[in-house]
Image (tube, rainbow, N blue to C red; front, side, top):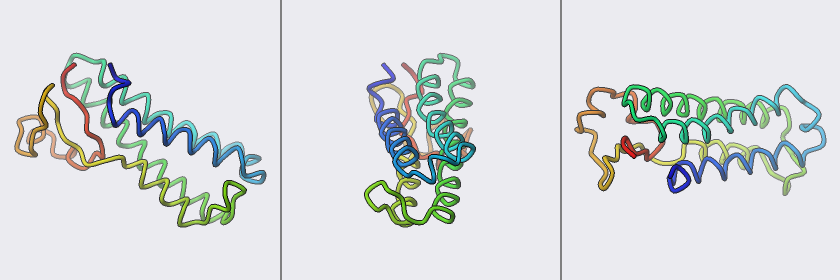
Length: 144
């Protein structure tokens, strides 16, 4: 089940942190465009990890994981926008450095291809064929 994936669990935690950040800062919460965009990007990470896991066709699986990877970059970038324009939030007095640390959580953990029981090194056939996945920031299974 996708709920068992550490990457999905971490993405879920990130979504919760993003929603807390955007709801608890009164001035940020009024910036509907920015808050909606960062929320959608965070949800995209979680959703694409789940959908990629459920796909059985390898190219589709890789595509969904790549979309999740792209959304991590979007979340990180948007957190810089928030840091630059809302330097202090009501969410625990979060400073720009703490906003940025949320972005690093969006990167989750180093990517590894899992064939069901053991992680593969970057020399695995999938990783070799798709080197751009090596920095995806996820530990994602390639089979269910």
